[in-house]
Length: 242
Image (cartoon, helix red, strand yellow):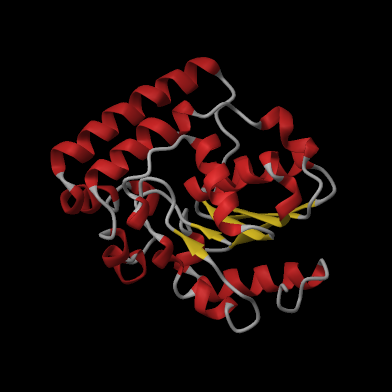
C-alpha cells in the first residue's frame, strides 16, 4: 500500500510501483485533497481511517505527508499493518511554539495555492530547496496535475504538519517491523529518521540512500526498491502478499 507525498497522486509512485509489482500486489492511493480524492476533506486521523478502509492488510509505505498518514494508520489500525515503511517522514513537531509557527506557515501556503493556481504553484513548489536534487524528469509533474488547487489548500489546512499532534510519545507502541528511509543530502530528515528509529526500538531499521535528497525514492528508485525488497526478505515477506 503506497501513500504519496504532498502535491502528488497515486500515479507518482512509478517506477517504484512497477518494480514492486513483479513480486507483490501493489495498491497506490490518492490521499485526501489529492488526485481523484481532491474533494475529500479529512485531517490526518480521519484520513488514516479512510486509507485503512481502502488498503486493508498490507505492508504500508508512505513518503513525506504519506508517511505521516501511514504512521497514523499503524497507530490507529495496527492489525492491518504487517510492516511500515516511512520515507522522509516525521512523527510531528514536538515543540508547541514551533508547531504553532508551522501551522501559520501551512495556512499561508494554502492561500498561496489558491492565489497561484495549481500549475503555477507546482512550478514554485518544485523549485524549493527541498527538491534541489530532484531532476525534473523524476518529479512527475504530470501526475501532480491530477489534483486541484482547492484540494491542496484543504490538505494543508486539515492535514499539514502544523495541525498534527506529535506522535513521538506513541512510537514505542509500534510492534510491526518498521523501515525508516531518508536521503543522505536531506540532513533534517536523516536526523528525524534516526531519532524516530531509536524511539520505536529494536523492531525499527534505518537505511540512508547516498547522494539523494528528500524525494530519495524518486531520485534513486532502483536503490530504494533494492532496500525495500531486502528488508521485506529479512522479515519473511519476500514473496507476494496473499
